[in-house]
Length: 209
View 1 (tube, helix red, strand yellow):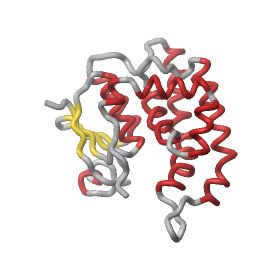
View 2 (cartoon, one colour):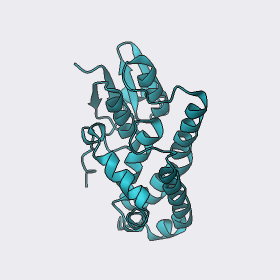
View 3 (spheres, helix red, strand yellow):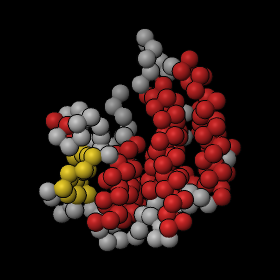
View 4 (spheres, rainbow, N blue to C red):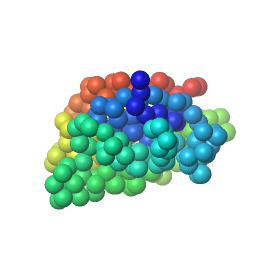
């Protein structure tokens, strides 16, 4: 029987991040596929954003809060270091990936391919070209973080849970696929993470056409 329910679309990188974190923690969960703004989502998050989580009488919105709850409420490998300095540095990188890199890499770049605003629904080249300088900057920061071990490919963690879905999607598109291939640390990180059981078990299906 699942310990928790996670509600949201499986293709959402934030939904996937919470599912990876649950798997790394060893917490069984049931995915309830739900688009944003549906009644079961709005009942927990008044903004209608996914994911949301239910655990008995506990209902929580926002992916960071969900991951924090999973880490604190269940036994299993820690998703945050116990040492104060190491925990702060891990939180620094988790915050960077979630709040700085993700809005550029997913919301602006990937969405210009997945959800273009062009009349014929072809990739929005104007939006892609406009965001490429920022994409390049964030890819360089991430490559350095992985190469230095600040984000450790071989360990579970909050930053890792967020970064793996992002890189998975970036590897689908020509500009960022090339950047990953040209950065051995990022390419190795992605390969290592994609082989982890928690990632394989939660791999989302392709987006509907």
